[in-house]
Length: 490
Ligand code: NAD
Image (tube, rainbow, N blue to C red; front, side, top):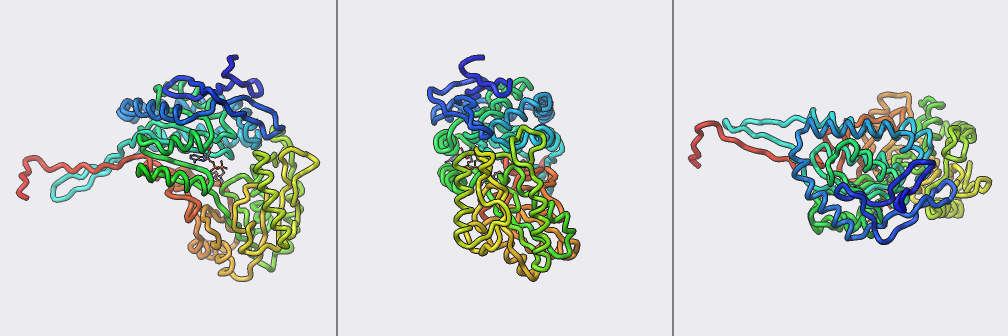
C-alpha cells in the first residue's frame, strides 16, 4: 500500500489520475465517502486545469498511433479489456457498491457483466461497420469512418462504470483516444478500469482518467480546444453549461440527460404485470434516469391498482446494499436526500397524499428514504414536472386514451415511456404519439445495444448505440475517385 492507494473491502484502488499511462497525483485531494454508512473511503486526487490539459495532451499524442491501428487489433484489445473486467467482476462490484450504494447483487450479476459486454459489443460492431460506396457518373464515392480525435467523456454517479464504458468502448473502437472524468461522488471503479485497460495492452495515452469536480476538472476538459468530441451523461443544468463551453470550440456533443417518464396503465392491462412494472421503478433507490416516475392509471382500475401496488411495495426490503436480500439501498448523498425530501414535503404541503412513504426512513437512519407514492398531485405541480431522482412516484388517473397521451407528453422531458396494456393496437396507437427516446410495452429496461438510445426534448441531444455511436464518434469522410483515364472537361 502506498499513500496513493485506498482499500475497499480488501480491494486496492489507486487514488491518482491516469494520464499518458502514468499515475499522476494532484497537490490537493477531495474526500470520497461511502453512502452506505458515511465512512471515508479515501482521499482522491483533485484535478484542475493543469491535469485536464496534461490528459488532453496525452490523448492528442496517442491519437495518431491508435487511429492507425488496424480495426482487428483495436477489437482484440477491447475484447482483452472485457476479459479483464470479467476476471475482476467481484472487485468491481464490491468497490462500486461501497462508492454509490447500488445493490451488490445487481453489480455482480447485471451491471459488471454489462460493462464487459459494452467492450465486446462495440469491438464486434466495429468489425461489421461497412465502408459504403456509391457511384456518380462513373466516379466512386467511398464513405469512410474516420476517428475524430480526443474525446472527453463525463459521467454521473448513479451507474458509474456502466455509463462510462457505454461511451469509452465505442469511442475507442472508432479509433479515438479518451479522457474520462467520473463523478466526484463515485471516482473508484474508473481507476480500476484504467488498470484493467493497461493490463489488456491498451497503449499509453489512449485512455486517460482525470478525477475531480465538475466545475473544475470537468469544465477545463470540456473547454479545451484540442478536444474533438464531448459525450455527457448527467443533469440538464450541467448539459447547458457544457453546451456553452463546447460551443466556443464548435465541438460536437452528445447529451444523455434526465427524465420524468410516464408509466401508462390501461384497464385492459395484466394488472399483476402492471404493478410489478410500477414497483420496479424504485430500483437503485429511484436513482435511474429512465425510471417511470409518473404512474398514469385508467380511472376504472385506479383503486385496485393502488391497493395492489401498496401491498407489493410493502414487501420491498430496505437495507444495506451489500446484503443479498436487500431490494432498496440508501440514496447517494445527504444533499440528494435533502433534495428528495424537499420535493415530497412541498408536494404534501400543496395537498398531495402519501399512499406509502413520504419521509426518510428514520428506523434505518443514514441516507435511506422510504419508497413513496403520492396521489392528488396536479399536472403542473413541481413533483410531477421535475426529476426527483429518489424513490418517489406520483399517481394520476385518466379516463380516455387521448387524455393519457396528453398527460404523458406534458413535461419538458422525453427520455422514455412504459405502457401496460393487453391491446396490441392500442399500444401501437399510443406509442406513435408519445415523445420518448425509448418506449417499453409490457416490459421495462430491456434493450439491445444495437438500438439507438437517447432522449427527446430536454432529455438529451443525439442518440448513441450501435451505428449511432459510430456516427457520433467518427468524422465521416466521402472520397470521390474518378474512373481511370477520366479527363476533367469542366
Ligand atoms: P450532474 O450533471 O450533476 O453531474 C454529472 C457529471 O458532470 C459529473 O461527473 C460532474 O462532475 C460533471 N460536471 C458538473 N458540472 C460540470 C461542468 N460545468 N463541466 C463539466 N462537467 C461537469 O449529474 P448527476 O447528479 O451526477 O447525475 C444525475 C443526472 O444524470 C440525473 O439528471 C439523471 O437523470 C441523469 N442521467 C441520465 C442518464 C441517461 O442516459 N439519459 C443516465 C444516468 C443519469
